[in-house]
Length: 449
Image 1 (cartoon, rainbow, N blue to C red):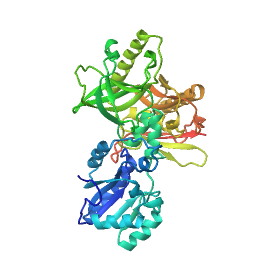
Image 2 (cartoon, helix red, strand yellow):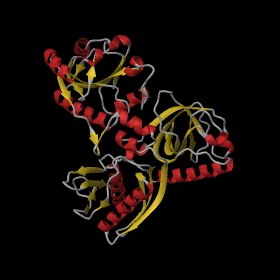
Image 3 (cartoon, rainbow, N blue to C red):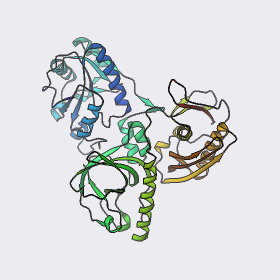
């Protein structure tokens, strides 16, 4: 992938397909737009690229209210390259750029990129005072010979996927849902710096990560994560917060790399977050803190040993029924199917918006057959919601037969504005083994609302 430092630095012969935006995080919606553009560009024998701005326009226009980024510019460029783009333009955004009329900006793209096709979303706008909206671009595009393609807003599991939503979800610590919308584990990287070395004295040495202040990071708490050092991956337990037990004042990101004993000060460390384990807590003393860290380490090691993946398919799809609320559920294995059925029930109730304390517990259910077991399993979780306000966000199935399930669930204790499922029904209930078309288990479940 070629990278140009400005529009005027690129002298393309065309035809050229282009999309414009910050594409922060390169989530599933971004990749869906790029894939549609790439397919059309391939048919036209055209180059296919992306134009982004640096710094972010809000940092220039509203310096007192900058947008924290999901990915750094370097990380974004790597993701753009992985998406298979032919080129990326990183155009400097200044106050002068903000005053550019949309006609002049489009003419600049036509002149230097030989632009033939522009791909945008329904709320896209460019130029001074955002005057270059969709209607303007459609009309002006015809005038200068540029086809403008307006791509519908992307939805995944019924939710509009936006960078702003992912930022909010990360800020709540709902890492599991952010990962789903990103289509990968959220990662943050930085240089390992010296801390106060307190972790080493407790028997759990940590790598302290120095990151940009304008970066999004998950809410304070403890997480299971993968640590990547010079291309090598290690399981890790990560603490984000102020360390209240030792009267800490500054927020830090500390990672204990499990079964790792190397000096990595000054090296780059990437942390890919998998699951939230608990909130940050203040303990009675160092002994209690050490005991909890040991439990966190064991739990993180167990979670990562399962090698949890972010599915490349939708875990569920909402169904339209006159009286009931239903979902089609999918899973690569029967265990995944049962786990995703639980996620579907809570996803319909907007569990991703709950910001209460983190909880985890074991859930066991029994049934006379698979279908009965699925209803009983979901009914038990629904009872946990009704009695303890448990909103499930992650499920690890430890044992499953046709008559029994035992699982460890992670979630939040808190109400949801959409929490109005009353019961799990047997109506139209079905569980089907994988079909050759998608190789996925399939279930249909209806809820009484």
